[in-house]
Length: 457
Image 1 (cartoon, rainbow, N blue to C red):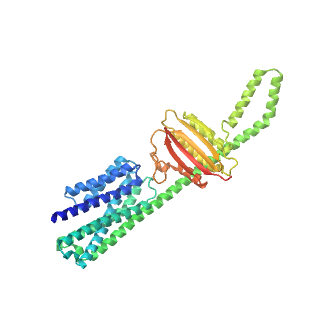
Image 2 (tube, rainbow, N blue to C red):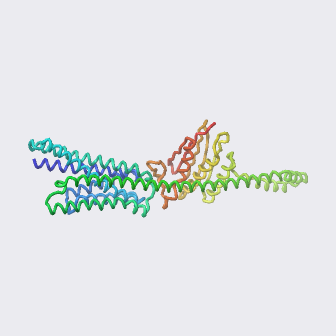
Image 3 (spheres, rainbow, N blue to C red):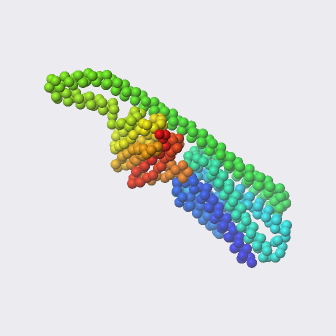
């Protein structure tokens, strides 16, 4: 019978480690670039816990959990080197959440044993005692899993800006609460050990209120961790809003520049229109005097002036023309082949400022995306079907695009991602204001951005 008891205890321990490993995978999955890294993180944690269980070392329970979490962090960071500080916080938070869930499960288990003891179920023979042990072991594992799953679910819901970098100062701020919780845990552990050494009894067997204090402390600890995450996300959202506003202000400044350039072009056109009569008279005189070479040269100079004013772009909107002309100039300076078949929806009620936000961000991203390509090229096209207005931009791209699971936008590879990544956010915001959206895909060495807008007829 002793063998069955050992098998049941070891099975419960293995099941608990497996379920905790699964919850760890579930916690870190939204923060990592791919599912494989999250799977390996959970698997390594499970492997370390099994090694420490079957090859016991001189280490207490919390030390073993710390070793498992440390191994999980090493694997997680080795497979995804982004945002190290965030990974440290996640592992530290998981370590404490597991302890809180473990404590809650033990409290529920002891309460269950009290119920069985009250009804004298365990006094009906060794078989009944074993059945109670198996049931309560399974109940303990399941309740621990549910508590941990629920706490991780709430942390994941509160932590909304998952792809935002965490700085060293922010990590220090975020760890202040968990470190206080950990200090409290070791205080409880110290007092219970001292009581056991002096009285040779567990303190909770003599003073039941100790358990209630522990439970209350664990609940307060979880709420404190959750509130720290929630507060941190509020701060990050505020900073993100400030950066988005700064981007919008910059785009408005660009718009003013474009308008100034349009006004300058109109001034040149008016001047040319004013002088057109003189140009016509000059050409007539050259032709009448039978000076064809001089007439050709004069006409060539006139055409060149017209070309410099109007340029190659003719979308139907002067502001859009300026943006296309400026983007073409930037692209050609970098050796990028730029082609555009773009038409402004003149008959639709679309704000030129909104379209300038889309085009400025799209073309700037496309020019940056061509970096490293052997044959860089950008192709921009727009078309309309009834009230659906489509803009599609394809640019050469070297590398692999990794999309964020929540936003659907590419995860930035910039060294300072805090200052990047808002172009596509601005494009999506404009598209959604027209009841549309964006689609991103990669095929045949090209990054393709499709923007759909619904226009009023």
